[in-house]
Length: 337
Image (cartoon, rainbow, N blue to C red; front, side, top):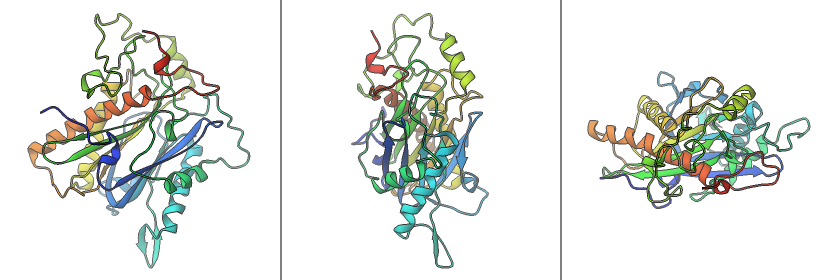
């Protein structure tokens, strides 16, 4: 049976998760946080050559801590890692966190993308604003949230078009739900050549990102490594960061495997991807709320859905982007044809 989305077609269709955004239009940057309603098993896989991260070592299967409290995706390059401190502060106020001798330490791994050279005002003074943006994002976390030019996708760019924040979900026949959240800021392009058609078209459900399908005939410039890529690669100004989540019961090793599978969605949705100047990263997250431990057959479906759902989320990120003052690139809806 074909994959079908959950009721929201957002990562929050996975039971046990809420998402909050905070952004600044003048800064052209922002923060997105995934808040776990209960501590959740997590893993991570980095395949890009220029990652920026915080607290990712604790996610490795051989390390002691088994669950985390939230995940952060942020703009701001290395400055954006401060966002996790703001999220920690918000969670600590609620008494959330790993308990050690009566103290609560919220565990909040984070990843960042480069959006400093996107036309926004980065003259923020002594300290960057990301800690406060992280706090605000955590305070506003809910089941419904904006995609497109929002949160960590506010200042995102791709090759030739604005990037953005995207999300999608898939409900499997087994009863397991998979959800993806992505801040799409890639060196490559998510559309085929100069067309409006998305590389992710074979995985589209309904018309969730335009319903255009694949172009016919296939354009001659589909694999054109033109100057638009070269300029971006010289700047080193990119990265796609994401979360793939499920309500299945997974170990830390299986959550890492889920993150690995979701990288297939990057390959299906972005050309080129995983370059030396992208910090491409996926967090895998399992809330366990379905109570279902995947069987061998169900596991194959789960990992297939991870890649397909991530590809859809990436396309939806660019499709939903909206124009703003000072933009360096047009949005998808402005592209002719």
